[in-house]
Length: 270
Ligand SMILES: Nc1ncnc2c1ncn2[C@@H]1O[C@H](COP(=O)(O)OP(=O)(O)O)[C@@H](O)[C@H]1O
Ligand SMILES: Cc1ncc(COP(=O)(O)O)c(N)n1
Image 1 (cartoon, protein in one colour):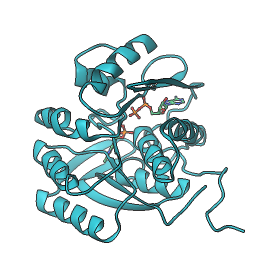
Image 2 (cartoon, helix red, strand yellow):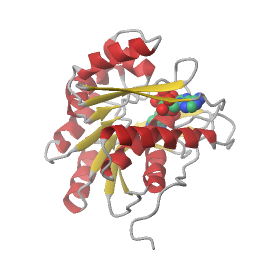
Image 3 (spheres, rainbow, N blue to C red):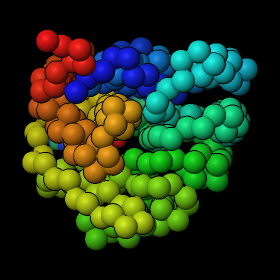
């Protein structure tokens, strides 16, 4: 059930071409049916062919955005995407500590599909030490999970082992995304007493710009709407699978996924 009175917040970078980052997050919030808000951490000059320039915003304006949003419209769930420097991570962590936040979804964005590094190498330590431990759920893809743990992932057994290693950093759940392995698109949810596999057929489409951003925002929306963790992942996996299935050629490179939710009613609908 969609409910546009439920506020959700993304703290992430802007993608000028609208396929990933803040733009993908807001489109997802809207399609799934929550009220989307944004705190921008960096502006990327980006299109479907690549990331051409990045300008990080100051700690001051990042802190202020968080402060005024929370003072006025407290989000039910927050998602964090691109946070590129150690200082920005620390600022966000310290700001969020002022609020009693139930659902923090951390997508540890590191490298764009086009191969551009969106996380400074020196930021990894703060990501692991301060941000990941605060997360309700963290959603690494396989290269990110390998970078965080220093371990290799070649199959589902490895996903479980490496996911459990990430769990030791302190988040409540880890969703390891398997889009980078061959064969079916298999994601694995790991928690202290949970191990769930979410499987979909691999869709042969090149347009997967923003899939990670979209999935983590879908999870944020579903948690905010009141679904439990397993149901939130199941519905979000359905959403991303459909979004990839209907992805389209726009621009000259890796196009975006399509945002729509055809299944649910709107709260208050008669
Ligand atoms: N070709 C595909 N067909 C179906 N699902 C996919 C495909 N590629 C990725 N996915 C799914 O999209 C989501 C994002 O996965 P992934 O590509 O691993 O992360 P990221 O976008 O962060 O690199 C996951 O749920 C994954 O299983
Ligand atoms: C601002 C921003 N945030 C995140 C991504 C990752 O998305 P993808 O892995 O699909 O390139 C991106 N390209 N740009």
